Each structure stands twice: as C-alpha cells, then as structure tokens.
Image 1 (cartoon, rainbow, N blue to C red):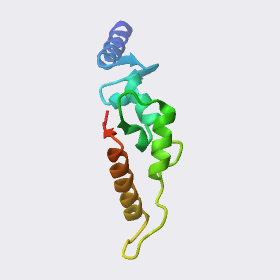
Image 2: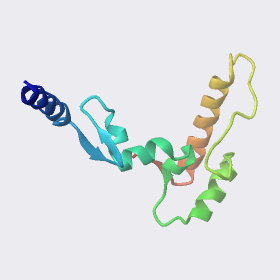
Image 3: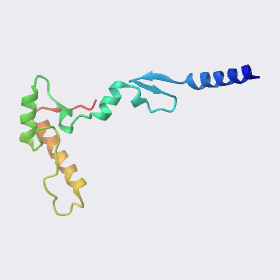
Image 4: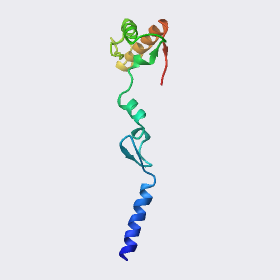
Length: 117
C-alpha cells in the first residue's frame, strides 16, 4: 500500500511538472505569462523605451537625436509632458495626446520615422 501511495505521488508530481519549463531564471508552467519566461520580452516590459526613442533616422547619433528631440519640445531623456491644457481640453490625457502629435510632426519634418518594435 505504501508503495502504491508513493507511486501515485510520484506520478502526480510528474504529470504536474511536464508542462513546466525553466526560463529567465524562473519555473514557468502552462498558465504562467510567457513574458516572465522570455528574457527579451521581460526586459522590454520592465525597461520600456521612451516615446522619443521610437523615432529613428539612419546615420543619426544619439546626441544629434537628443538635440532634435529637445528642439521639438521633448525632454532630454526621450519622454515628454503636456506643457499646458488648452481651453476645451478635459484633462491631462488630451493635452499629452496633443503634445505627442506635435512631437511626431516635428520629428517627421526633420526626417525621422516612427518605428515600433
């Protein structure tokens, strides 16, 4: 009887472990989100690119890109913020959307293209 119980426990553990893998330093089962098991996906999730870093132009150095981004109204770290709300805008989200549109137009006028990974 003890042997039967041990066999059943061993089988149960084996069945549960068959769907598990080890990835990115974690044990990943069938219901684990894949981002936790894929190092590249995890890094993109934990350290996302700034909005400005999606604007690329061949042959441009990081310093030249930063100068163009700041000249368009962005922050030196690649982010941006709404400068002010215009009359009729209900909140910061609308103002930030307007600012993103302005930055996009300005960067594209300088020859950059928006490239999402």
